[in-house]
Length: 67
Figure 1 (spheres, rainbow, N blue to C red):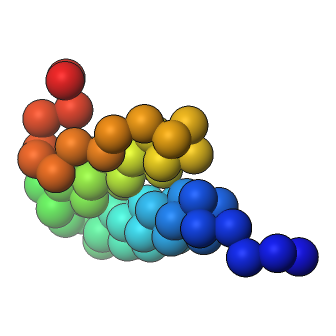
Figure 2 (figure 1 turned 120 degrees about the vertical axis):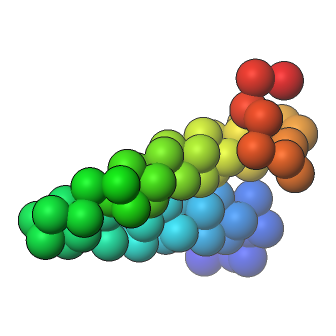
């Protein structure tokens, strides 16, 4: 399979999102809801960024995804 930078970058963002999700679930099970919520929000942002990368759109460098 040829090296595709867009697919590699998309996979990287999705991997980060999955890591945040997994950690959020573990923290929630331990009763650490505030931190679980933070990681769930981070997971959502990273998943959105993965979609933007895949669609060849600008990925904002801030926390404001309402651009």
